[in-house]
Length: 160
Ligand SMILES: O=C(O)CCC(=O)C(=O)O
Ligand SMILES: [Fe+2]
Image (cartoon, helix red, strand yellow):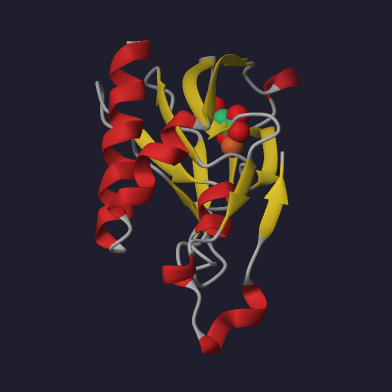
């Protein structure tokens, strides 16, 4: 599972880099990357309450998150109109979430998705995720190819 998720992460990032015409930079990002896997259990709402916040709204700080889970559909994403939408993740499927790292790298061309976990019902939720990110100490810079006059002042540069 872990190696398949890493492979998927690499394929997606390579596609993103290529689609922006900077495929040659992909290898350096991969060499500079570190990855974390996290397994999380979410409890059912206490005291028969109809729902409970499992994880408060946030954007991921890493580059890309790839998640799978048991059948409990509790992941919500904030859409462009400000509505929380429950994401139905089919069995045997992954969901891919863009984090702040990819937003920064793309000079804000790719937005980071705000998401949260809201628990309801009487079944626990389990999720397993790959959180890919530049390794500690790596400088993460917007490629010059993605800098233009219109959004010059949005250039992010950060050191992890
Ligand atoms: O478990 C989930 O479905 C979401 C996890 C998550 O958003 C996170 O750990 O950052
Ligand atoms: Fe998250």
